[in-house]
Length: 364
Image (cartoon, rainbow, N blue to C red; front, side):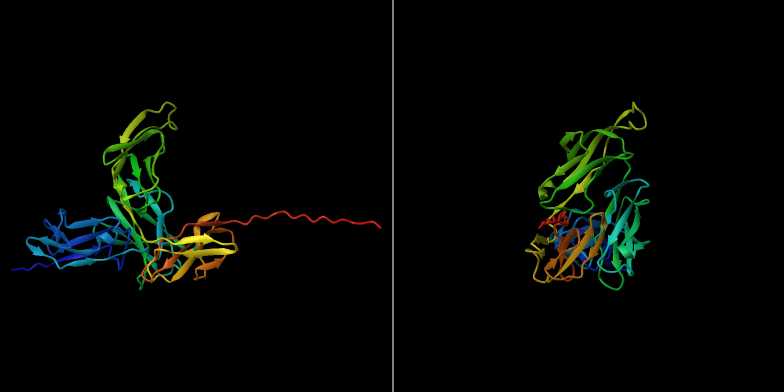
């Protein structure tokens, strides 16, 4: 008689899980999956699939997960979500997290150090694949081309070899519709502004957009954006839109069309504590009032006005720096296994005044 052992595994296989990550727990059983019962901290869950997707995780997801199939229970799996941000940043250079069939996105990786030992990956279903990385070492950034192929959703991330340093995870989703409800790429943060866009593939003239939350209409106008000015967890829900549009750039009397988007989940989270920049007469001060005590050093960054994708880490590690170069400045705190959120951006511009010297000649 064969004996089957159940186990719960995490995908992506992150050494640390950070707040805002999308992760999947898999109930593994040799010989295939069967109807599954899940437990969280001993309490039975309604989820019955052998895959459990957890989106935009927070410390509220911390705990022990178990699964059961045919009366056999798995070993417990302890999930710990760090209320911090990872070392590197991965984000789309343009576009949002929802794509049409055959579409793709350039995802840009920015790190503090050199990019020599960085690699990028994608999780599609339960399979992980390595991706080609186009490195621009001078600019301290790299680009990967992200596409979904046959998958309905996929999670992308990058990591450094031999050390536990990685980027945030970016989840992209596919729609088969012309109309897309496009939420933010990164999780929505409590207290911040959140923009939801109603986008029609091909760029037609949008005449009307009706936004819905959990199938209830919340806004109807000619604007393509619904903005939540001060997001709270009461804004959590599934959002969609109904667009009325016409391709007037193809035909002067383009036929009017209407279509619904797929629903997209919006989850508002607290997020890690944020650093704060304050200015003085000759420099900038970085602080983090709500950071834990193990956040002890500071990282400063400078970005040129004319190239917002070129970020340079400054050598200073103190709370106060003197600034001379024009550009955008921000900071964050190093907390060991992760970082605080980036601070607000401080814009520094030098105004040069024209000086005139008037010489008076006195005749004797």
